[in-house]
Image (cartoon, rainbow, N blue to C red):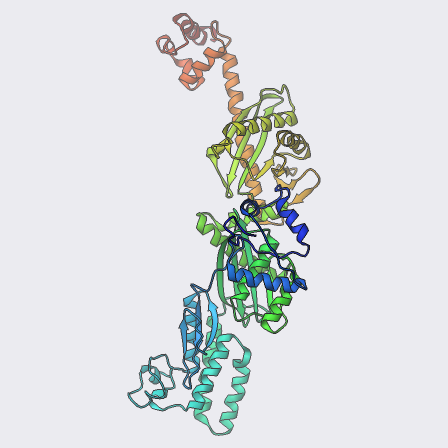
Length: 589
């Protein structure tokens, strides 16, 4: 896709080009915000025909990497990453660098955390006693004394000829295997080498291997952050909101959490497509792909993606989506971290972002419901009939957007008609204030009614008549104890108790809207009772009763007021003030 300046703004593949183009340029009702904005900017497009879907996938990856189109999710480059560089000279050294150079050296990584890669290298140096100084070998051999590391057994001191080139290269090779997480450095193999050296009376070598075994054991204990039954895998999870996506990647090597990365990217598509795009770009920037990649949900073209990973890595790579057990728990931990990174940028708590994301997925919404409106009706046998509207933004109450409704067109007890009136008035207010983009001037991403299918039916009819049928609408169902039990659509109930985050959020919304509506109802009922009492007084109608309550604030204050104080109320004359005073001090006794 190209814009009016002929710049490439999006690259994608399609099994059937006609269908894909029709989807983009047809109705925009079900499009994500990214697609809507992209289509508005498309001036022209061109295409390349390939011989297979896999060829199309490979070409798509290559072109995205070359052109970096604005509307594709993009992992720009390796800026901010760190690598372990293994030199290709005879007396090679292992160092931490920020960039991969075309210098013939071997590079291990990338690593997100400088601390992680530095700690790994420090451990390798301790175990295999390789130098960390700036001396160059062989030219600096014999030109100075050994440093402290040699005397405390942290270096084999090639600087004074204490180790041969062959043994030095062997140590470097073992350190590289160790840093890659390969199993060649396991304790069983090293134990066999130690015993063999001892049998050959090479006690000095046996002692070195013994010390190495001890160091490896100690390091394993210290670095056992998470231990899994799977030795080598990457776990990838995401959180989506506001057309952005937060990806978390956990790298496991030898059953332990070895490194982690987070990416917050723009131009998110559907979750399935976004996962596919991320996997292809993430591993196109890496020189190592594990045999197993664990995800938190489905992806588009799973078989093609697995084939691409296999072709790139030269080995079989499996994509797994666990539903229970240890792997599922690790995925949830990864997902929680993705949510936490997202929340940190917005100043919220991770569980709130995760709850909204889960709620959107559970209800099958096109986007995460950041802005939620909820409604409840409250009355007493059809009297003092009112409604409350509460708003939750980013999982938190937005009290400045709360609104109260006094039911005007419904007489008696009719919750359905009352809810329909409230929704009609709310949408009318939107038409008046839509340029403000706040309060009534902002439409919700989701409407939750405190009620079941009956309320949904009447409100859905109003939404359709007003042209807002695209706003997602659901009801919140309570159990016999008046506690949140499920969410219902017009067709079926959706259980939420299995997801703690969603259950907590929906319960909070339902309790808040009920509290707000019933609080307004009680206030109105009390005010009505006060008014009816005051209107018994000669000369006091509804307006004067209302003025009195507004001026004095409470019935008790009116009851105890003197005539001179009553006269200060704008609409109260001397005669009426005397009538009020006499009513409370003589007639009521």
